[in-house]
Image: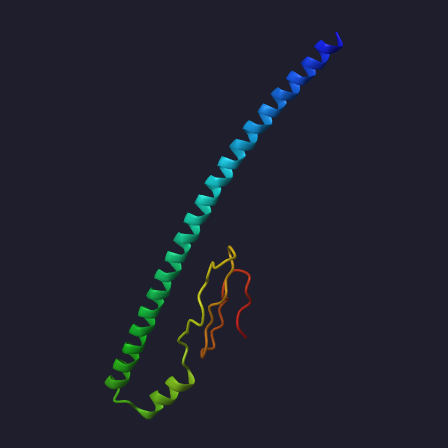
Length: 128
């Protein structure tokens, strides 16, 4: 009787072990899938940031061209030049969001030379 009871306990333990191994295998597959999805999201984020930086640079360049055209159309009046010098609000990108080695790390975007402070990135404080 004891041998049969020990055999039953052993069979139950083996079934439990097989069940746990199957669960572990499924969790490893799920974890691998999540890592692939995370990498895809990070890649898309980097492409989006690069595209937005390019668009910002184009807008800033166009803005500068329009300022020059306006100044030329007004005849380059001295008051306009003083006003432009004292009221330059064009933002400058100092560094971009970078995933780097840490997920969700964000260095900074800032508005230099202007008097419009904007938040740099999630969780960062605006420049004062």
